[in-house]
Image 1 (spheres, rainbow, N blue to C red):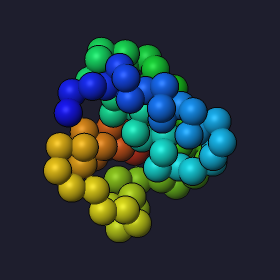
Image 2: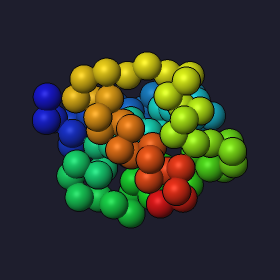
Image 3: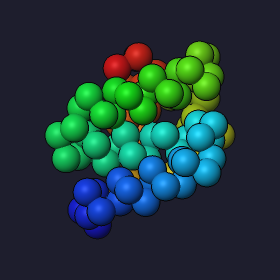
Length: 85
């Protein structure tokens, strides 16, 4: 754990192939937050809201179960997304 900088390009490569997979935008957003790249995290949040303007943390929690440290990071990021970071 903690290899956020290394994870970002992996997530971005996945997003290049699946740009409308809404939850996948939260993965790099969580990494961006961890490394202090808040503007980049906001960019991912904007993509989430573009794809689904009705996105909310509660919707995501019902659709996707993510536990452990990544879940903590994910839900923190999606909470910001739901607020339109």
